[in-house]
Amino acid sequence: MSEKQNNLNEKSFEENMERLKEIVTKLEGGKETLENSIELFKEGKELVKVCEEKLKNAKFKITQITEEEM
Image (cartoon, rainbow, N blue to C red; front, side, top):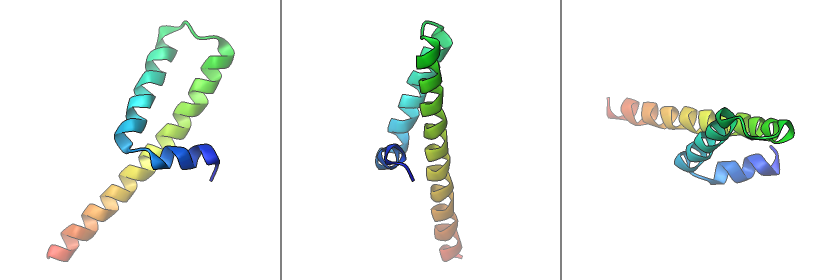
């Protein structure tokens, strides 16, 4: 796992989603340079990966809690 991904993992799901929204807004604005757009896209893909993993872990925890109650 890269250092950047570790930093993203340390942030909350909500913080990562907020950053992802910022990236989408910038990319949709069309005012970024090609090079910056590529970097933003790359960061966005990393954020999506981290957020998906956090959601997967949350779903697993909820499933465990639900199964324990039965």
